[in-house]
Image (cartoon, rainbow, N blue to C red; front, side, top):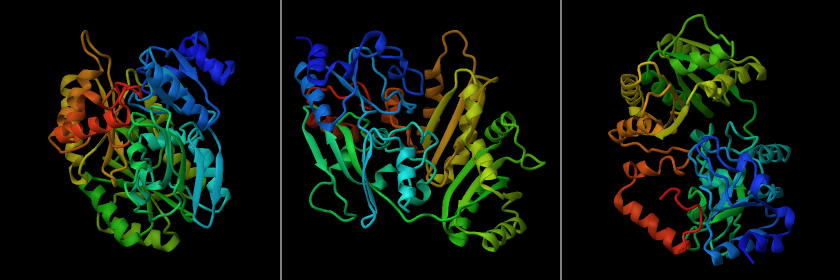
Amino acid sequence: MNLIAELRARLGEAAVLDGKDIGGRHVSDMSTTGTAPPLAVVRPRTIEEVSTILKLCHAAGTPVIAQGGMTGLAGGGNPSGNEIVISLELIRGIEEIDTASATMTVRAGTPLEECQTAADDAGLFLALDLGSRGSAQIGGNLSTNAGGIRVIRYGMAREQVLGLEAVLADGTIVSTMNKMLKNNAGYDLKHLFIGSEGTLGIITRAVLRLHPPTGEITTVLCAVSTYEDVVKLLRRAQGELGGVVAFEAMWREYFEFTASALKLSFFAEAHPFWVILESTAKGDAMESFLGECLEDGLLQDALIAQSHAQAREIWSVREGHPIETLPNLLNFDVSLPIARIGDYAVECSAALHARWSASHVSFYGHVGDSNVHICFSVEYGPGEDMHDVDDIVYGVLKDYGGSISAEHGVGTLKRPYLHLSRSPQELALMRCLKQALDPRGILNPGKVI
Protein backbone atom coordinates (compact mmCIF):
# COMPACT_ATOMS: atom_id res chain seq x y z
CA MET A 1 0.00 0.00 0.00
CA ASN A 2 1.44 3.41 -0.93
CA LEU A 3 1.66 6.23 1.60
CA ILE A 4 -1.37 8.24 0.41
CA ALA A 5 -3.54 5.13 0.40
CA GLU A 6 -2.32 4.22 3.88
CA LEU A 7 -3.07 7.74 5.15
CA ARG A 8 -6.61 7.42 3.78
CA ALA A 9 -7.01 4.00 5.37
CA ARG A 10 -5.93 5.31 8.78
CA LEU A 11 -7.59 8.75 8.76
CA GLY A 12 -10.49 8.40 6.35
CA GLU A 13 -11.03 9.46 2.75
CA ALA A 14 -12.15 13.00 3.59
CA ALA A 15 -8.96 13.74 5.53
CA VAL A 16 -6.64 13.38 2.53
CA LEU A 17 -6.70 15.69 -0.51
CA ASP A 18 -4.65 15.16 -3.64
CA GLY A 19 -4.62 16.25 -7.28
CA LYS A 20 -7.11 18.97 -8.16
CA ASP A 21 -8.67 18.79 -4.70
CA ILE A 22 -5.62 20.40 -3.09
CA GLY A 23 -6.39 23.97 -4.16
CA GLY A 24 -4.14 26.99 -4.56
CA ARG A 25 -4.01 28.09 -0.94
CA HIS A 26 -1.75 25.17 -0.05
CA VAL A 27 0.78 26.09 -2.76
CA SER A 28 2.14 29.37 -1.41
CA ASP A 29 2.14 31.69 1.56
CA MET A 30 1.59 35.43 1.09
CA SER A 31 5.03 35.82 -0.49
CA THR A 32 3.41 34.23 -3.60
CA THR A 33 6.71 32.46 -4.31
CA GLY A 34 5.36 28.91 -4.10
CA THR A 35 4.60 27.26 -7.42
CA ALA A 36 4.29 23.49 -6.85
CA PRO A 37 1.41 21.72 -5.09
CA PRO A 38 2.35 19.02 -2.56
CA LEU A 39 1.81 15.31 -3.07
CA ALA A 40 -1.19 15.51 -0.78
CA VAL A 41 -2.77 17.63 1.95
CA VAL A 42 -3.81 15.81 5.11
CA ARG A 43 -6.23 17.46 7.54
CA PRO A 44 -6.03 15.74 10.92
CA ARG A 45 -8.74 16.35 13.53
CA THR A 46 -6.80 15.31 16.63
CA ILE A 47 -3.26 15.47 17.96
CA GLU A 48 -3.16 11.67 17.82
CA GLU A 49 -3.86 11.84 14.10
CA VAL A 50 -0.95 14.29 13.67
CA SER A 51 1.21 11.69 15.41
CA THR A 52 -0.07 8.94 13.11
CA ILE A 53 0.71 10.97 9.99
CA LEU A 54 4.25 11.68 11.14
CA LYS A 55 4.89 8.04 12.07
CA LEU A 56 3.85 6.94 8.59
CA CYS A 57 5.83 9.66 6.81
CA HIS A 58 8.89 9.03 8.99
CA ALA A 59 8.81 5.32 8.17
CA ALA A 60 8.47 6.12 4.45
CA GLY A 61 11.12 8.88 4.54
CA THR A 62 8.59 11.28 3.01
CA PRO A 63 9.03 15.00 3.83
CA VAL A 64 6.30 16.83 5.74
CA ILE A 65 5.28 20.49 5.92
CA ALA A 66 2.93 21.91 8.54
CA GLN A 67 0.68 24.69 7.28
CA GLY A 68 -1.42 27.17 9.24
CA GLY A 69 -3.05 30.32 7.91
CA MET A 70 -0.32 30.75 5.26
CA THR A 71 0.09 34.43 6.10
CA GLY A 72 3.90 34.23 6.18
CA LEU A 73 6.17 36.18 3.84
CA ALA A 74 9.33 34.04 3.83
CA GLY A 75 8.18 30.92 1.98
CA GLY A 76 8.30 28.85 5.16
CA GLY A 77 5.11 26.92 4.39
CA ASN A 78 5.69 26.47 0.67
CA PRO A 79 5.96 22.92 -0.73
CA SER A 80 8.35 22.01 -3.52
CA GLY A 81 6.19 19.22 -4.90
CA ASN A 82 7.22 16.03 -3.11
CA GLU A 83 5.90 16.61 0.42
CA ILE A 84 2.87 15.72 2.47
CA VAL A 85 1.28 18.88 3.87
CA ILE A 86 -0.32 18.65 7.30
CA SER A 87 -2.94 21.38 7.49
CA LEU A 88 -3.74 22.19 11.11
CA GLU A 89 -6.98 24.05 10.35
CA LEU A 90 -9.13 21.37 12.05
CA ILE A 91 -6.92 21.21 15.17
CA ARG A 92 -8.86 24.20 16.35
CA GLY A 93 -10.48 25.48 19.51
CA ILE A 94 -9.87 26.99 22.91
CA GLU A 95 -9.77 24.23 25.49
CA GLU A 96 -9.68 26.34 28.62
CA ILE A 97 -9.29 29.84 30.01
CA ASP A 98 -7.98 29.70 33.56
CA THR A 99 -8.67 33.10 35.10
CA ALA A 100 -6.79 32.23 38.30
CA SER A 101 -3.52 31.58 36.45
CA ALA A 102 -4.43 34.01 33.63
CA THR A 103 -3.79 31.43 30.92
CA MET A 104 -5.46 30.14 27.79
CA THR A 105 -5.02 26.56 26.55
CA VAL A 106 -5.50 26.56 22.80
CA ARG A 107 -5.07 24.30 19.80
CA ALA A 108 -2.61 25.25 17.08
CA GLY A 109 -5.12 25.77 14.26
CA THR A 110 -7.11 28.41 16.12
CA PRO A 111 -7.04 31.85 14.46
CA LEU A 112 -5.38 34.55 16.54
CA GLU A 113 -8.44 36.80 16.45
CA GLU A 114 -10.59 34.04 17.92
CA CYS A 115 -8.16 33.79 20.84
CA GLN A 116 -8.17 37.57 21.33
CA THR A 117 -11.97 37.64 21.45
CA ALA A 118 -12.14 34.77 23.94
CA ALA A 119 -9.62 36.49 26.20
CA ASP A 120 -11.62 39.73 26.05
CA ASP A 121 -14.83 37.87 26.89
CA ALA A 122 -13.10 36.42 29.97
CA GLY A 123 -12.01 39.88 31.12
CA LEU A 124 -8.37 39.35 30.14
CA PHE A 125 -6.04 40.44 27.35
CA LEU A 126 -3.96 38.44 24.85
CA ALA A 127 -1.02 40.66 23.98
CA LEU A 128 -0.06 39.12 20.62
CA ASP A 129 -1.56 41.16 17.78
CA LEU A 130 -0.89 41.15 14.03
CA GLY A 131 -2.53 42.68 11.00
CA SER A 132 -3.34 39.16 9.76
CA ARG A 133 -5.10 38.29 13.04
CA GLY A 134 -8.22 37.03 11.25
CA SER A 135 -6.47 34.25 9.34
CA ALA A 136 -3.10 33.71 11.07
CA GLN A 137 -3.19 30.65 13.31
CA ILE A 138 -1.61 30.27 16.75
CA GLY A 139 0.62 27.38 15.65
CA GLY A 140 2.09 29.47 12.86
CA ASN A 141 2.45 32.51 15.13
CA LEU A 142 4.50 30.46 17.56
CA SER A 143 6.53 28.49 15.04
CA THR A 144 7.71 31.79 13.52
CA ASN A 145 7.90 33.63 16.87
CA ALA A 146 5.65 36.36 15.51
CA GLY A 147 6.03 39.95 16.68
CA GLY A 148 3.38 42.53 15.86
CA ILE A 149 2.43 45.88 17.27
CA ARG A 150 2.53 45.15 21.03
CA VAL A 151 6.11 43.86 21.25
CA ILE A 152 7.40 47.11 22.74
CA ARG A 153 5.42 46.42 25.92
CA TYR A 154 4.74 42.67 26.01
CA GLY A 155 7.50 41.06 23.95
CA MET A 156 7.44 38.62 21.04
CA ALA A 157 5.18 35.56 20.74
CA ARG A 158 7.79 33.60 22.70
CA GLU A 159 7.06 35.73 25.79
CA GLN A 160 3.35 34.87 25.59
CA VAL A 161 3.89 31.10 25.93
CA LEU A 162 4.04 29.21 29.22
CA GLY A 163 3.47 25.67 27.94
CA LEU A 164 3.62 23.86 24.63
CA GLU A 165 2.85 20.57 22.96
CA ALA A 166 4.60 19.41 19.81
CA VAL A 167 4.87 16.25 17.75
CA LEU A 168 8.36 15.13 16.74
CA ALA A 169 9.37 13.76 13.35
CA ASP A 170 8.86 10.15 14.43
CA GLY A 171 5.38 10.86 15.82
CA THR A 172 6.39 11.20 19.48
CA ILE A 173 4.13 13.66 21.32
CA VAL A 174 6.09 15.92 23.67
CA SER A 175 3.77 17.77 26.03
CA THR A 176 4.99 20.44 28.42
CA MET A 177 1.67 22.16 29.06
CA ASN A 178 2.94 24.23 31.95
CA LYS A 179 0.80 27.02 33.47
CA MET A 180 3.40 28.45 35.84
CA LEU A 181 5.35 31.62 35.21
CA LYS A 182 8.27 30.08 37.11
CA ASN A 183 9.43 26.59 36.19
CA ASN A 184 13.17 25.93 36.05
CA ALA A 185 13.02 22.13 36.26
CA GLY A 186 15.55 21.39 33.54
CA TYR A 187 15.67 22.58 29.95
CA ASP A 188 12.78 24.77 28.79
CA LEU A 189 11.89 22.57 25.85
CA LYS A 190 9.19 24.81 24.41
CA HIS A 191 11.88 27.14 23.08
CA LEU A 192 13.14 24.39 20.77
CA PHE A 193 9.93 24.69 18.78
CA ILE A 194 9.01 28.38 19.07
CA GLY A 195 10.64 30.13 16.14
CA SER A 196 11.97 26.95 14.52
CA GLU A 197 9.40 27.13 11.66
CA GLY A 198 8.31 23.51 11.90
CA THR A 199 11.80 22.13 11.26
CA LEU A 200 12.18 20.49 14.70
CA GLY A 201 8.59 19.50 15.48
CA ILE A 202 4.99 20.44 14.76
CA ILE A 203 3.29 22.57 17.42
CA THR A 204 -0.18 21.24 18.25
CA ARG A 205 -1.25 23.00 21.49
CA ALA A 206 -0.09 25.84 23.69
CA VAL A 207 -0.70 27.48 27.04
CA LEU A 208 -0.72 31.23 26.40
CA ARG A 209 -0.09 33.86 29.02
CA LEU A 210 -2.88 36.43 29.43
CA HIS A 211 -2.73 39.90 30.96
CA PRO A 212 -5.06 42.34 32.69
CA PRO A 213 -7.11 44.43 30.25
CA THR A 214 -5.29 47.52 29.03
CA GLY A 215 -8.35 49.69 29.55
CA GLU A 216 -9.06 52.59 27.22
CA ILE A 217 -6.14 53.36 24.92
CA THR A 218 -5.41 56.80 23.52
CA THR A 219 -4.18 56.85 19.91
CA VAL A 220 -2.11 59.81 18.68
CA LEU A 221 -0.68 60.59 15.25
CA CYS A 222 2.51 62.65 15.53
CA ALA A 223 4.44 64.56 12.86
CA VAL A 224 8.23 64.49 13.39
CA SER A 225 11.11 66.16 11.51
CA THR A 226 14.01 63.71 11.91
CA TYR A 227 14.64 60.10 12.77
CA GLU A 228 16.67 61.25 15.77
CA ASP A 229 13.54 63.01 17.05
CA VAL A 230 11.54 59.83 16.50
CA VAL A 231 13.86 58.03 18.93
CA LYS A 232 13.78 60.92 21.40
CA LEU A 233 9.96 60.87 21.29
CA LEU A 234 9.96 57.15 22.02
CA ARG A 235 12.22 57.46 25.05
CA ARG A 236 10.42 60.55 26.35
CA ALA A 237 7.03 58.87 26.04
CA GLN A 238 8.26 55.80 27.88
CA GLY A 239 9.85 57.88 30.62
CA GLU A 240 7.25 60.61 31.14
CA LEU A 241 3.98 59.35 29.72
CA GLY A 242 4.04 55.71 30.78
CA GLY A 243 1.79 52.94 29.54
CA VAL A 244 3.12 52.99 25.96
CA VAL A 245 1.59 49.99 24.20
CA ALA A 246 2.48 50.79 20.58
CA PHE A 247 4.95 53.04 18.80
CA GLU A 248 4.91 52.82 15.01
CA ALA A 249 7.01 55.02 12.71
CA MET A 250 6.35 55.69 9.03
CA TRP A 251 8.74 57.41 6.67
CA ARG A 252 7.20 60.03 4.37
CA GLU A 253 7.14 57.87 1.22
CA TYR A 254 5.17 55.12 2.94
CA PHE A 255 2.76 57.41 4.77
CA GLU A 256 1.96 59.59 1.77
CA PHE A 257 1.44 56.63 -0.58
CA THR A 258 -1.00 54.80 1.70
CA ALA A 259 -2.82 57.88 3.01
CA SER A 260 -3.35 59.16 -0.54
CA ALA A 261 -4.62 55.79 -1.75
CA LEU A 262 -7.03 55.63 1.18
CA LYS A 263 -8.09 59.25 0.57
CA LEU A 264 -7.19 60.22 4.12
CA SER A 265 -5.75 63.57 5.17
CA PHE A 266 -4.80 64.42 8.73
CA PHE A 267 -2.65 67.58 8.52
CA ALA A 268 -2.23 70.30 5.89
CA GLU A 269 1.56 69.94 5.72
CA ALA A 270 3.77 67.00 4.81
CA HIS A 271 6.44 65.83 7.22
CA PRO A 272 9.46 63.50 6.96
CA PHE A 273 8.22 61.09 9.66
CA TRP A 274 4.90 60.10 11.16
CA VAL A 275 4.49 58.20 14.43
CA ILE A 276 1.47 56.37 15.83
CA LEU A 277 1.75 56.50 19.61
CA GLU A 278 -0.66 54.50 21.75
CA SER A 279 -0.76 54.78 25.51
CA THR A 280 -3.01 54.16 28.46
CA ALA A 281 -2.48 57.82 29.42
CA LYS A 282 -5.62 59.88 28.95
CA GLY A 283 -7.02 63.39 28.86
CA ASP A 284 -4.92 66.06 30.54
CA ALA A 285 -1.85 63.82 30.87
CA MET A 286 -1.67 63.14 27.14
CA GLU A 287 -2.45 66.72 26.15
CA SER A 288 0.17 68.06 28.55
CA PHE A 289 2.79 65.65 27.22
CA LEU A 290 2.10 66.54 23.59
CA GLY A 291 2.03 70.25 24.38
CA GLU A 292 5.47 70.12 25.97
CA CYS A 293 6.85 68.14 23.03
CA LEU A 294 5.46 70.71 20.60
CA GLU A 295 6.95 73.58 22.60
CA ASP A 296 10.35 71.86 22.65
CA GLY A 297 10.27 71.30 18.88
CA LEU A 298 10.29 67.52 19.26
CA LEU A 299 6.92 67.37 17.51
CA GLN A 300 5.77 69.42 14.54
CA ASP A 301 2.12 68.52 14.95
CA ALA A 302 -0.08 65.99 16.74
CA LEU A 303 -3.62 64.64 16.46
CA ILE A 304 -5.39 62.76 19.25
CA ALA A 305 -7.97 60.35 17.82
CA GLN A 306 -11.40 61.43 19.00
CA SER A 307 -13.12 58.10 18.36
CA HIS A 308 -12.42 54.45 17.66
CA ALA A 309 -13.30 55.14 14.03
CA GLN A 310 -10.66 57.85 13.76
CA ALA A 311 -8.10 55.60 15.48
CA ARG A 312 -8.89 52.90 12.91
CA GLU A 313 -8.33 55.42 10.09
CA ILE A 314 -4.90 56.22 11.51
CA TRP A 315 -4.04 52.54 11.82
CA SER A 316 -5.32 51.82 8.31
CA VAL A 317 -2.48 53.97 6.97
CA ARG A 318 0.07 51.98 8.98
CA GLU A 319 -1.41 48.64 7.86
CA GLY A 320 -0.79 49.84 4.32
CA HIS A 321 -3.01 47.57 2.26
CA PRO A 322 -2.76 49.87 -0.82
CA ILE A 323 0.97 49.05 -0.99
CA GLU A 324 -0.03 45.52 -1.94
CA THR A 325 -1.25 46.79 -5.33
CA LEU A 326 2.27 47.76 -6.43
CA PRO A 327 3.83 45.49 -9.10
CA ASN A 328 6.43 42.91 -8.06
CA LEU A 329 6.12 44.05 -4.46
CA LEU A 330 8.75 42.79 -2.03
CA ASN A 331 8.34 43.19 1.73
CA PHE A 332 11.45 43.05 3.88
CA ASP A 333 11.50 42.57 7.62
CA VAL A 334 14.81 43.42 9.28
CA SER A 335 16.05 44.55 12.66
CA LEU A 336 19.07 46.51 13.79
CA PRO A 337 20.10 48.71 16.73
CA ILE A 338 17.50 51.45 17.14
CA ALA A 339 19.99 54.31 16.86
CA ARG A 340 21.15 53.04 13.45
CA ILE A 341 17.79 52.47 11.75
CA GLY A 342 17.64 56.02 10.30
CA ASP A 343 21.10 55.79 8.72
CA TYR A 344 20.36 52.33 7.37
CA ALA A 345 17.15 53.56 5.73
CA VAL A 346 19.02 56.38 4.01
CA GLU A 347 21.82 54.13 2.74
CA CYS A 348 19.55 51.27 1.71
CA SER A 349 17.15 53.59 -0.13
CA ALA A 350 20.02 55.29 -1.96
CA ALA A 351 21.50 51.95 -3.03
CA LEU A 352 18.16 50.68 -4.34
CA HIS A 353 17.39 53.91 -6.22
CA ALA A 354 20.90 53.91 -7.70
CA ARG A 355 20.16 50.50 -9.21
CA TRP A 356 16.49 51.15 -10.10
CA SER A 357 15.83 54.87 -10.34
CA ALA A 358 12.09 54.40 -10.99
CA SER A 359 11.48 52.06 -8.07
CA HIS A 360 9.19 52.55 -5.09
CA VAL A 361 11.13 52.31 -1.82
CA SER A 362 9.46 53.03 1.51
CA PHE A 363 10.07 52.27 5.17
CA TYR A 364 7.89 51.77 8.23
CA GLY A 365 8.19 49.79 11.41
CA HIS A 366 7.85 49.25 15.12
CA VAL A 367 11.19 51.04 15.81
CA GLY A 368 10.85 50.64 19.57
CA ASP A 369 11.66 46.94 19.22
CA SER A 370 14.40 47.50 16.59
CA ASN A 371 12.19 46.36 13.70
CA VAL A 372 11.81 48.14 10.36
CA HIS A 373 9.97 46.99 7.23
CA ILE A 374 10.92 47.89 3.67
CA CYS A 375 8.55 47.96 0.71
CA PHE A 376 10.14 47.72 -2.72
CA SER A 377 8.48 47.68 -6.13
CA VAL A 378 9.92 47.94 -9.64
CA GLU A 379 9.51 46.63 -13.16
CA TYR A 380 12.60 44.48 -13.56
CA GLY A 381 14.84 44.67 -16.59
CA PRO A 382 16.12 41.63 -18.54
CA GLY A 383 18.01 39.24 -16.28
CA GLU A 384 16.94 40.97 -13.07
CA ASP A 385 14.81 39.50 -10.30
CA MET A 386 14.06 39.74 -6.58
CA HIS A 387 17.43 38.23 -5.61
CA ASP A 388 19.18 41.33 -6.92
CA VAL A 389 17.10 43.35 -4.46
CA ASP A 390 17.87 40.91 -1.63
CA ASP A 391 21.58 41.30 -2.24
CA ILE A 392 21.35 45.06 -1.76
CA VAL A 393 18.97 45.12 1.24
CA TYR A 394 20.86 42.43 3.18
CA GLY A 395 24.27 43.52 1.93
CA VAL A 396 23.80 46.99 3.40
CA LEU A 397 22.30 45.50 6.57
CA LYS A 398 25.40 43.41 7.23
CA ASP A 399 27.48 46.50 7.92
CA TYR A 400 24.96 47.66 10.56
CA GLY A 401 25.04 44.49 12.67
CA GLY A 402 21.39 43.76 11.96
CA SER A 403 19.24 40.67 11.52
CA ILE A 404 17.79 39.56 8.19
CA SER A 405 14.58 38.54 9.95
CA ALA A 406 12.95 40.48 12.76
CA GLU A 407 9.62 38.66 12.96
CA HIS A 408 8.72 36.82 9.74
CA GLY A 409 11.09 33.88 9.97
CA VAL A 410 13.70 32.63 7.52
CA GLY A 411 11.82 30.10 5.38
CA THR A 412 13.40 29.64 1.98
CA LEU A 413 13.64 33.25 0.86
CA LYS A 414 16.11 34.37 3.56
CA ARG A 415 18.06 31.14 3.96
CA PRO A 416 20.87 32.15 1.54
CA TYR A 417 21.53 35.20 3.75
CA LEU A 418 21.32 33.58 7.18
CA HIS A 419 25.11 33.58 7.49
CA LEU A 420 25.01 37.39 7.54
CA SER A 421 23.19 37.31 10.87
CA ARG A 422 24.46 34.07 12.45
CA SER A 423 28.01 32.93 13.11
CA PRO A 424 29.42 29.60 11.83
CA GLN A 425 29.27 28.29 15.40
CA GLU A 426 25.59 29.20 15.74
CA LEU A 427 24.74 27.58 12.41
CA ALA A 428 26.63 24.43 13.41
CA LEU A 429 24.63 24.20 16.63
CA MET A 430 21.38 24.66 14.70
CA ARG A 431 22.34 21.75 12.43
CA CYS A 432 23.20 19.66 15.46
CA LEU A 433 19.73 20.24 16.93
CA LYS A 434 18.12 19.44 13.59
CA GLN A 435 20.05 16.17 13.31
CA ALA A 436 19.14 15.18 16.86
CA LEU A 437 15.39 15.83 16.57
CA ASP A 438 14.87 15.03 12.89
CA PRO A 439 17.60 12.58 11.82
CA ARG A 440 15.84 11.68 8.57
CA GLY A 441 15.34 15.32 7.67
CA ILE A 442 11.64 15.04 6.90
CA LEU A 443 10.36 18.14 8.74
CA ASN A 444 10.01 21.16 6.47
CA PRO A 445 13.18 20.29 4.53
CA GLY A 446 15.13 23.09 2.87
CA LYS A 447 13.79 25.72 5.27
CA VAL A 448 15.84 27.85 7.70
CA ILE A 449 19.09 25.79 7.45
